[in-house]
Image (tube, rainbow, N blue to C red; front, side, top):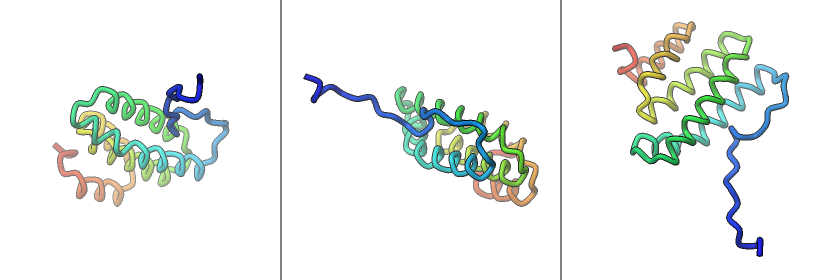
Length: 120
């Protein structure tokens, strides 16, 4: 009986990406990944192994997509969203590394204001 068979949860970051992906579509995809992974990031901060693995997969896919965005402001905004996700998961080391990749001064200032621990 397959009616009651448990199906694995399909996450947005596990879906195949049809390349080439434009900058706007990539930014939208990163936004959706970060929004969907926010709950996993919070669970990751509480040392839940399953949620931690989901957060790490989501962050990895979002970073891979962000590296391929050619517009610098869109890339900086996408990286800021990933930094927010990392800070939700208490992954300060990764967040600091990504924070240094942000070049737009106003996005850096916003990230510093939101997360003062980034500049330490």
